[in-house]
Image 1 (tube, helix red, strand yellow):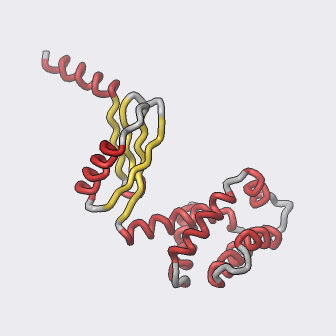
Image 2 (cartoon, one colour; image 1 turned 120 degrees about the vertical axis):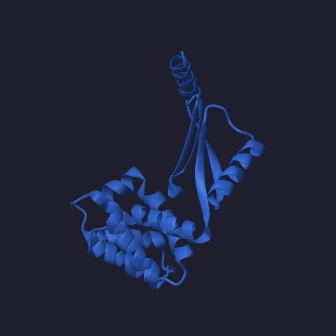
Length: 175
């Protein structure tokens, strides 16, 4: 439900703003600020008025903020939807990635891959999808490798345990 509402606000914002890239960048910074527990508790608190919440967000933006973005934040505040800023930023980022045909993905593995291996993975995915993909690495306790590009709906998982199980199943079936 939250995502549907965020899409409507993101569509309205992208149609009203001339420079959606800079607006998305500002919303990304606000998303990081909102993720702090203190700020999140203030935004979800019924004790703090909507006007105070809006003033807090606008004060964080500063006075040199685009007028469209300022009005957008005021509308979110009036409708008690300031907590949707992270979801709206996510939708805008997805739209920008789709427009530029550049996507970001995550590689999770126990062992860190070197730049050459990561580059080969990026090239293979680019060939498969027709898009430019940049991958970031994350350490995990996974005994294998997992590559995911959420905005394209791609998830590839290579697990030693899974390969072992499939090999055993294949041997059992062939007997």
